[in-house]
Structure formats: C-alpha cells, structure tokens
Length: 132
Image 1 (tube, one colour):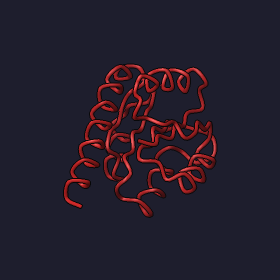
Image 2 (spheres, one colour; image 1 turned 180 degrees about the horizontal axis):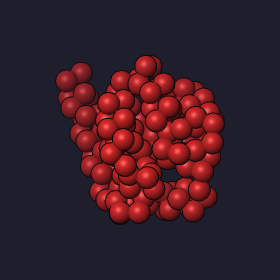
Image 3 (cartoon, helix red, strand yellow; image 1 turned 30 degrees about the horizontal axis):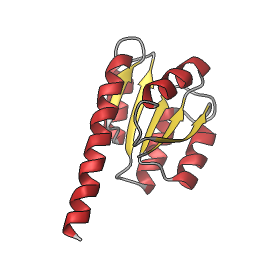
Image 4 (tube, helix red, strand yellow; image 1 turned 90 degrees about the vertical axis):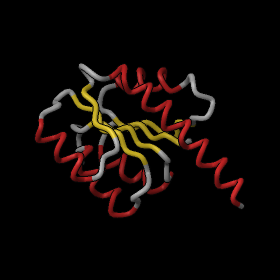
C-alpha cells in the first residue's frame, strides 16, 4: 500500500513514519509540509492512502481532500487535526473523508485503522487475483 503523509509539523511526520514503519506492506511515497505540494504529489504518485493534516500552509487538508475527490473517489483519505470541531468533522465527512482523527485524543487509534486498511487492501488484492 502506497501512503502519502502531509503535516506542517516535523514531529507529527516523524511519529507517523515510525507508526507505519512496522508494516512491510506499506511504502511511504512522500512526506509534505504544505497542502499545495501534497496535492501535486498525490496527483503524481497516486497513493492508496493519504494521511493529511487539516491545517497547513498553502491549501488546507480539507481543500486537498476536495480536489482529490474530484479525481479519485477510491483513494483512502485520513484527516488529522488539533482542531476537532464539529464544523471540520462535518465538512470532512461531506467531502468524503474515510477517517477523521484528533491528534490530541485519537492519534493512537490511527495505527489500528491503518492496520485494518492494509489488511483490507491485501484481501482485495487476493480476491482480485482469485477472480482473474
């Protein structure tokens, strides 16, 4: 599974990389610190999963999500924030986010969700191979 990371915090990017490094099935295709670079990279790299901060320089994570959903309805998208307001959560859900996490309260839950996404991705691949 190809994963793209985006957050304007070096610490969060490091924690995400450490968290994901335990999975052999995950390839981190890039880490970015602003939304404009994130969107450009997503278009070039076509990752299976993007884990993106909602507040970044350039485009916000929500703006990146909105643009991506116009082009790719199937890529998995996780938004992270220190501002888990109802407005942001509802806006993210309306834009088609797969998961929305508070960095302060839910960061540890992220690993379990990524594990499930990896397992589902592997199962999807096996099912496609069986059908072919």
